[in-house]
Image (cartoon, rainbow, N blue to C red; front, side, top):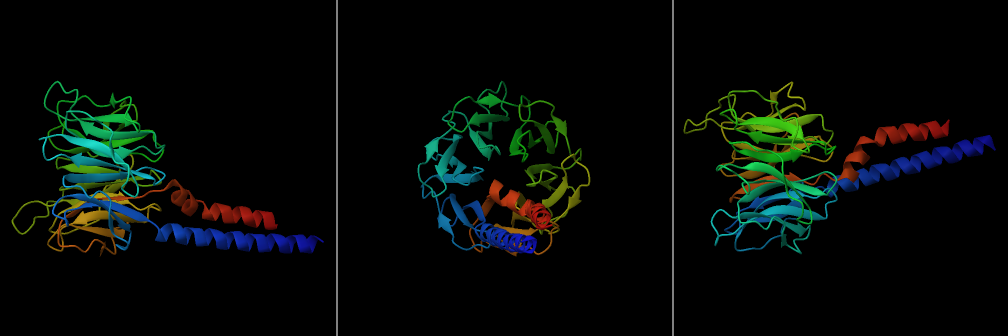
Length: 329
């Protein structure tokens, strides 16, 4: 009887392991990247699989739609609607993942942009000058129903590019408050603001890794020059405390806008290495870059869907397997 129980446990362990592996494959093949493209003559929000397949236009609007940001459950996208008939009046909108039910979330006469969805799905951070005592931009958060807007930064220079930490406790952002652009981090309530990069060159566009241990960002610090002699931007990565800063790309062109894959093994970004702006995907160490947008018109602002399900599933497989082995003993 004991041997039969052990055999049943072994069979159960094998079946569960196979199911987990199958689920991981399904999650990986269904990974989505939202981005903005100018292929229709204006900026529109598109979504595609992470290999460039199954491309579809979500917005189909004569005005410009930009800067997509996924909700944590993958059911909605925040984005920027740039109205051509109202100068400097970009607004934060939200829509369903299929492009339906588009609605104005910020609904303000000031210029608002750069949405970033909180990990708990309850708030969206964004950039605005709605309360500025001087002509500058600050970081705000707003509830996802459009209520309760709160100002997190109050600075005479430009604070932008908010990016939530995976645990929802911190927000990374870039600011030129010291005379050049630097990467900062603050508490989710705006407190304890501190500089992570402390470099005399320009560092911007931070993006947290799914495990919260690293931040990818953009910098011109290595002074790589393009064909016209202008310094170009490259993708860098650092530990979440600002240590161990290192370059991932090295091209005499512009590399921009990093966004991590759900398992933290790859980074999507924008590059002009083919002569036009394209969405690329590379390994997290900078290797194996691949063009996934393959379009001669501009493509920008990749946002990889970081589903909590896919992150936890990939991260807990070994733990689960260890638990199954414990059962089998």
